[in-house]
Length: 334
Image: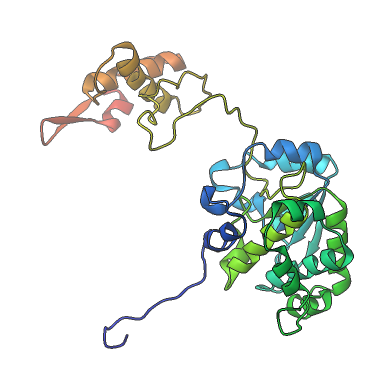
């Protein structure tokens, strides 16, 4: 490689890769890069979940990307319902403080060992859904042998073994495993159900695999038993179709389904898109051009919607026979 004058960089997973490269191969779920957050999980949790384990997840800080701050009130509801919360994170994060949950701080990078010890308790004490595992999973016998140390040079993944790896006392690992199995538990493993620091470390793929394995042992998909980051997964009406970004009618102005009432603070953008919508739907133009007349119509609609006096738009010519709005003059009105 020195002869080619370059240096290879082999970094750890830095976003969703740990989950996508690991968990998808465990449960065959490839939507959203293999990370959960299916619709209606909020409703399921409010109705059925008794405990939530936040593992490598601080949703009040990360906010669930597309969901923004929408989900903050959801966790208030969960707390008010009395749903118990456990936080597994080396850092006592903001959500843990807000939810007043039990905090278990593992040594960074040791999350997989901790997860295996939980599985060990469930297997040796029979605290898993045997019917679900028998009817809806494959490969459990091989997994069981590995956890019990029968196929790994006698290295059983006991809580005592995990204590040395993670720093979490074995008694606390057993207590968590037993309570988890005794309740309808939601696993909130990372923002959006997948992303999190644990899946961005070396071998983060193995942690993601174990997240799926743990919930699989408890009957993933049963009421209250899910993998949900608590940041997305709001109720959805599948009878209403709305176009995705890349679909031909994905632009609001061109879409035939953009008929719902919208509550937007940005009235300027709404008026702009509405004028596009008129061009296509009312006037049946083949396209909607950004002409001076178009912007004059948009401005008139905007001030009518706000109930403010209409401003004159001042224009400046630009090369190519085009025009742009002179905003300083327009705002001054001179």
